[in-house]
Image (tube, rainbow, N blue to C red):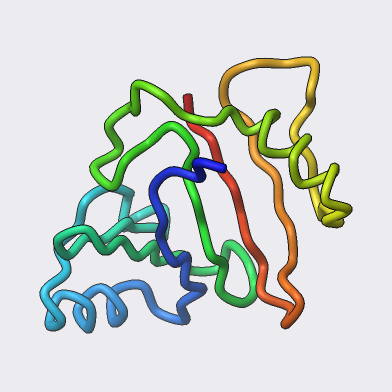
Length: 123
């Protein structure tokens, strides 16, 4: 399975404080909107999403079809193909992509330790 770019989506208490902290670690704002309480920050190939008040807990995020610079990959596994593979392995899905569509879609699974994994295809 080609899952695409990986990032950690962090649920933060104060996005401004978190932004400053990660800037001290060498991260720079890559995308997002501070006023809307979300930022994507990047340090080389490492991506961290900061989200205030959008969800509880932290989420491992993969973006099928994107590389770490949000460039469209020539070849990638569509989210619906990945979903079928997960189902064939009897992996329980928390949310599902509509298999009768194409383009942007997402799904969520939970790992054995309760960590949420989001596969979020934007193309």
